[in-house]
Image (cartoon, rainbow, N blue to C red):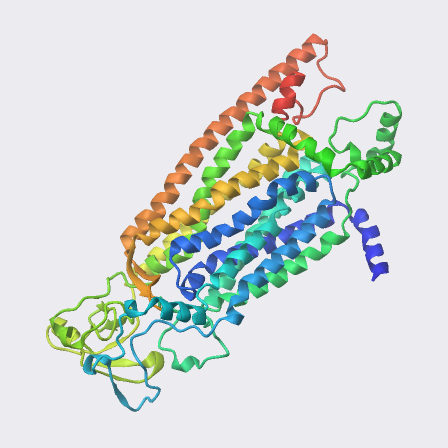
Length: 616
């Protein structure tokens, strides 16, 4: 094993930046894969633990809380240490978080969905529904005493969502070093003109992650949560029912294994390597070092030869107390850059809209495009007066006239035939009253399907979504380049880390919470927990949901685009001033072209201004 590790460590420097690019691309895919799956499982987790959207927003925000705990220290101290190994350690932590998130399933009892009936498994018999009995099965859940409710909740494991919260937080902690340390490492050892291409490659591979995550989420959502341990034929709900819970835990095991695999290459990568193209210029650099004319490139401390070895010895002498003393001055230098705060503000507003959208988009598509547009009848009237129906129960049924009822009892149904998902309810008095002329007064399980044009509207919605996502993605790489070229070389890791810290704190934690709270206000029918009390929402008012969800997103994106315009104006203005100062300096020295001419990525203005503004 030791020989294998030694051989890998010898080969990795030879393979150079390409191996690191491949490893970083894979880990970008893996983390996006897990993140996409988490977003797609929000509805399933909400139903499994019977919690409102506002609380699921807190759980989703725990990922950003994990980032907040360590991002500043990882970004600053990690840049001085072995960056690839820190990224690998972060991947291990992410994998542990995925496994912890799935753990409640193995300690919780079977999922018992809300129902008002006791169903017979005998297809040949006809059973009597609560409408014609003494209603002993219809119990008001508010009658539970506090003591019995506490015992029931303990038995049901209703607080197990805390493990999902902690697992997601642990995944956030592990994801912290990937972007600030990975991108800065890539920029340090690649050709300056290749950085944008490499970042684009990473982001392209990373985009596949959410797509695969949502595909896995779609598959797991169709698999019943207790698959393998319950009789699926006895279920009276299907995957279109708002009480259905898919195998949400299965995907977290899959994503955990993928992340675990992505960690392996980073433990064999070197702390530093020759900058791309350095081999051809090694003699020139060594000569420059002997004459005392050191390069102004930020990567000199990674040059091969005697100088690199000497500097490695100096790196060993650096201790954390010295690094800590320079932390606050580095922060002051960073935020005195007038472009950097504008980049942060623009990213913050855009991320607010994106996080809110991606968190509740599965719920939006389900509620707007996946269920009947008609509101289920959930009231006591003359046709069901003798049934003493509970308005809390949710057993939706669909009649032949396209009208949904909240339960067979509220439809006035008296008998049923069949079993499981094939159960049919007959002699429904409320349905008979609505039929003109008299027709079939039976109902079937589930809400009524939507009209035919719903599929067309859904395809149209997805088409616009893909188009907007493409346009938005086009700004990803330029945004990174603007950030990297606007910051002093020694502050790049800190700048990326502070951006992640601020954006994830204010752009990642609040949106799921306030989006969820506002979405909860559009709920029409709340479910009932097994032990009493309000559970997850079963049905939303479609128009109110649409206006709330899309209104928030479009408002935030509008503000973000206005800020992008301001940022563009500021960057262009700075570049023009830099060009004029450079020309004036060349004219002052009597030079029009020569070795002092620098590429576009130069430190601008006078030295004091350069320390503050840096390099576009």
